[in-house]
Image (cartoon, rainbow over all chains, first blue to last red):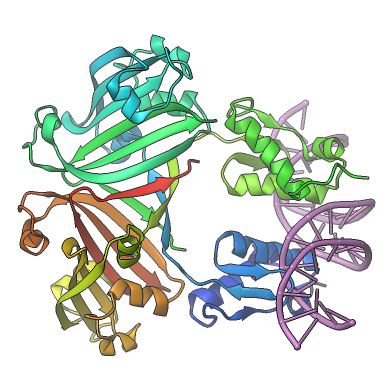
Length: 237
Length: 237
DNA sequence: TAGTGGTCTAGACCACAGC
DNA sequence: CTGTGGTCTAGACCACTAA
C-alpha cells in the first residue's frame, strides 16, 4: 500500500531525492526543506522514516535543522573532504609494484630525548622506540619513514622485527582505534637525499601523523615521498 | 522511570559508552558488540533507541553490522581523516595577516584548448575562463592560483572582476553544493618562482581540485604554496 | 499559541546468517 | 529452525521558535 517497491529503503530514497535537488541547484543554500509533516504525506510514510532521512542529511552537513523553525539547505563554508591516508606497503602493492622494506635504524630513546620531546607527550622516564626505514617499490626508493613509538603504550613493540614488517602496518593491526592528527607539507629531500637517491633540493611531500589515545601519544611518524607521489581526497561539504 | 536525566539524549550516551570501550581498547577489532536486545534491557529502552546508537557507530565506521549475525568492532584499514581545505583569503586573515589579491591573467579559452582538455570535461564549443592570480599575506606572496571556470556552468563568471574578489571565494559563495576531488603533491616552484619570489627549485605544496555537478566540470584549480605552508587533517577511522 | 524538530515507545514484518 | 539486524508504524511528550 506504500510506494512501489524499490531496491533501496524508503528513507534512503527520500534522502536521495532531497540531496539531488540540492546538488542540482534546484534547492539553494538557505532554502527551506519541506516540513517533516509534508514529506510524510508526500511519501505516505510515518514521521520516523522522514526523520531518519533528514537526520542523515544533517549529519552529512547538507542541511541545517532548527527545532521550532524548520530545515534549511546549509551554506557551504570551506571545502571539507575525506582524506584516505594509505598504508605505504598496501599502496605500493595496489599499484602492482613489488614492495621491499629496508630497516635503517632502530634504537631506544629516553622520554627526555629532544627528538621525542618535540613530537610526543609520554610519561617521564619511559622509553620510546625510534625506527627509521625506507619503503621500496620495484627496488627503487619510494618513501622514508621516521617513527617514534611509546613503549609505555605499546610494550610489545620492543620485540617486533621491523626489518620484516613495516612499523605502520604492524601498528595499524595491533593498536586499533586511536585518534590522529595529520600535517601535510612540502620540503626538500635534504638529509634523506642519499637514501632516496634524489638530489638534495628535490621537492618531497611530507606527511606527519601523531596518534594518541586518551591524552597519551602512542606513535608519531614522518613519511617523506620524493617526486610525483600524490594524496587524494574526495567529496565536498 | 528511565535512567537518570542527563544533558545528552539516551541514544548518544549509548553510543558514547560503546565508542569509549572501543577507543580505550577494551573492545578490540572483531569483538562482538552486545545484541540490540541485550542493550535494550541494559539501558531499559526500546529497540529503536539502541538501533539509532549502533547505526551511528556503523556510519562512523567504528563497527560493522551484519544482519543475522550481529555487530562487531570494525578492522581499522587505512587511516581516514577529515581534511579541511581552507579558502586562501580566509586562511590568511585567520592568521592575522593582511590579504591582498593580484590578478595576473584572465582570458577566455575554447573547450578544445589543451589546458582545458587536460583538466576538465566541458561541452564542445563552450568557453572556459582561465584566471591566474596571486594571494599575498602582509604584502608577501603566499600562493599562486591557476583556475579554469566553465562558462557553460557558471555564465555569471564572465562579468566578475577577479581583481577584487578571489575566484575561490566567489565560487564558494555562488556555486553551492558541488562534488570535488583533491590531489595533494609536492613540486618545485618552477615557472612560478618569479611571481612567488623564491628560487626555482623551492619545494612547494600543490593542491589541485576538480569540482563538478552532475558529470559537468564546473571549475578546476591548482594552488601552489611555497615554503612552510601545511594542511592539517584530523580524526581517525 | 501553534507548529517545528528531537526524542522515545512498543509493537510489527522482513531478509539473512548460522545451526 | 531461531535469532540477528533493517526497516517501518502510529502514536507520544518535550524544547524550542516564531507570531
